[in-house]
Length: 193
Image (cartoon, rainbow, N blue to C red; front, top):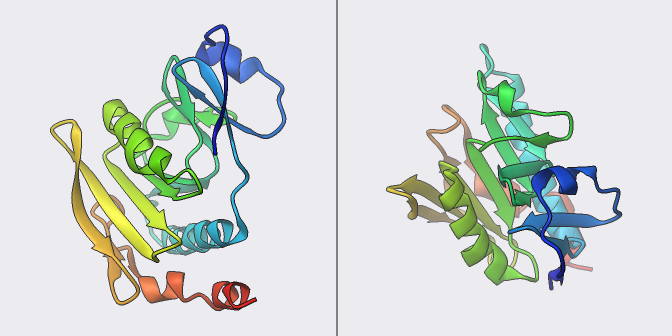
C-alpha cells in the first residue's frame, strides 16, 4: 500500500531539497511513500540489473548504462523511482548528481503489493512522459511484459515467461533466457523456505 502525504503541493526543486527517510516519490506535487519491497522483488530486480550490466560492460563502444533505484524527474511535479532504468550512450546529459532529469530509454518496474500502481498509473505516467520502452516484471506469475510507446500509448510487444528469451531493440544484441532470471538458484532456494 502506498501512503500519500496530502497538503501543499511541492515542486521538483522542493522535493529534491527534502531530507526524509524511506522511499518517497513525488506524484502531482504530493509525496507518496513507497512500501519496502519484499526479498523476492529485490532478488529479481538485482539479478536483472547484474545481467544487464554484465552485457553492457562487454560492449564496445558502450551502448549506455543501467541504473538501479535512481529517481527520474518526469515533470516539475512528478519524480518516480523505478526499479531499473537504462540510458543510452550519448544521453548522459540527463544524469544529475542523484537523479535523472529527463526520460530514460527504458524503465523496469517489478510489481509490488500495489500492483495497480505499476500496471495502470505508472504505465500512464511513463507513457505521458515519453519513455520509449517499459518492462513490467511480475514476481508472482514469473512473467515479463514488454511495452513499447507508439502514438503516445504503450502497445504490448510480448508477455514472456520461463521458456522465453527477452530481447529488445533498445539494447541491441541483449538476449536473456528468462529461465536464468525466474529460475535463479538463490531465488528458488528462498521461495522454498
